[in-house]
Length: 251
Image (tube, rainbow, N blue to C red):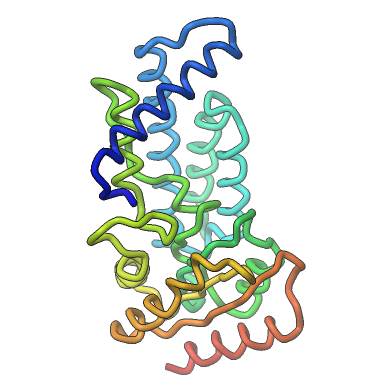
């Protein structure tokens, strides 16, 4: 529980222990200044990815969800020194796009696919006339989180950023709920609907799902729950997704 007494201090102590273990493994010390430089580098990645998501929200037809997922995968796996110079070039290319404004149904993806979002699902979504304009996924916008303070104690800055991160069912924190975040994100993105990706047997997210369903209903935002098991897009799943998109098109 993030609000428990001493939880923040506990996390700082755990980060310090991880730092000592990394120093022992590397055979050299890791200074506060080195950590601050790394924080600045990662913050640059977050700012660049925020620009990508701004573009997706404004002109989703120019940055399909499948491309966004590929960029996020690159951001998560490539050294930031190599990744950061490449994304501005990609964004410049997308800004120069002469594609006409699209008419896809604006959707937000949320849930916990645990792994990279199944490419076939994203491609099917576009094929059926849906347009992902935002997401609430760990291999997605949750990877951005918020900026980490670049001054002061770097371990405290990292801990504070974790406590202020996007609400998630895996974090018990009073006053900050996944349901409220999803509904607010859908409203800000002007989404017509929400896709909830729920892996089978994921009890933490399944427990929180009824609250999300109720909050979206209260906000007048339709949603579709899709249970996934990383085995690809099945016929029934395609049928349900197609029916959902067609329903939203008719509204």
